[in-house]
Length: 261
Image 1: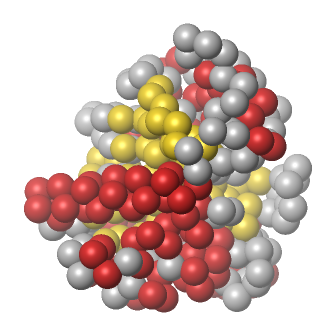
Image 2: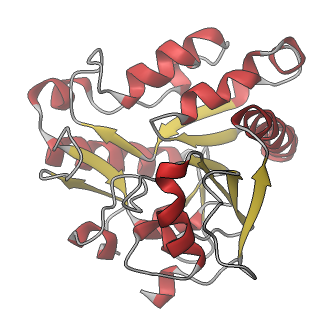
């Protein structure tokens, strides 16, 4: 597993509240958008689910709505529940209703999982087709590749962590965390419902240029402390990035981090 670790040192920034965290996430994202749009004409952004989408609401403020080059954004998901796209558990639906429908990103630049596999609950098929989608976009040079590995390299991933230390749909004690060959894998017995999901593999996650992990609330504090104590039983402890891996924490989530970490 060491080969998928060890690019950048884990950083953290602690905010007084979710509001300040959300504002900082918006600024961080907007700055990277400007950087990559200028450099290559695209900005590849990977979303997760949960509270993250509500924290992205700061990007709906006029100063960002008017300055961000939304037409150059390309949107992906680090993981997805294999349910119909209009199902309440769908990460796509969560992001579309709460954020994507409110900004002018071209619909062709939003890459949801295959709708037929989603409707049928076909996790394996959904993973295979999502991997094929990524490979096509690599071939079109919309997604970069990481150095000599050939793995896709996204510009920014916005991630979250569960109280058990899972990230994406990589869960403690499940084999998917060890998958190194595939870009996208699947799980049919997720300990958190719904059971069928697809997820980027750890090498793909860690090849991103920038990984921002946002975690709030006391319920996550024990897991956050374990991560910063390098407890690698927790998938989130393996998070790194090519340029920067930064944890945005509110005070409650950071409350149990050992001193000196």
